[in-house]
Image (cartoon, rainbow, N blue to C red; front, side, top):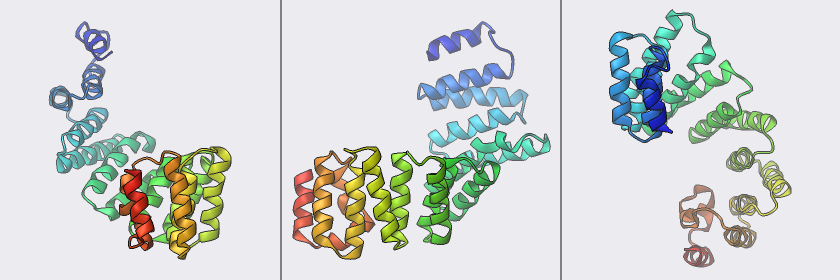
Length: 254
């Protein structure tokens, strides 16, 4: 597919600057970020204020782990878009890009600000609410984490990812009844989902109900819990770390 797109660009199936973006996107999809960056920079040499090309530059630099340069490209895109009076929604990718850079650099306050900006651009964006809630959880700002996770749940309440994140946030905020109901609801929607018993296990662990927690964890493992080797790294399971039954379960799951 990438070869076909490039061939089309070579015979001028599209006009400038679309041609540069088509080629760069094709290279990015093919995992060739270096080539994408070369193509983007050729386009920007002629059109240095082209917002889509600047956003693509941020993506390519992010893939190359040049996070500072990626952030600069995204910020330049925002500056030029505002100067051109473009619609705020056209900047969503730039805000997401800066947030991704911030998370890689553990700049949680910047990530929080960018996801909040995305929510202000589109209050019906479940991903923006969900990501903002995760960052707020990282900052232990539960008065932010809980309502935004709930907002994501109202928008996309049948999503396992949304419900599981909401349940984790309820658990961390010590809202155990709400957490249990949320994790139980996953099982109603997806009967064999490992995330449901796993979620119930973290609630039980936080409440000090270790027998219940271990039984639910065993159920989650039997239901093919992804990455069971990471059980010991989950901070919400920390109360179980010294329990020999937990250690045995982790060893068995591996």
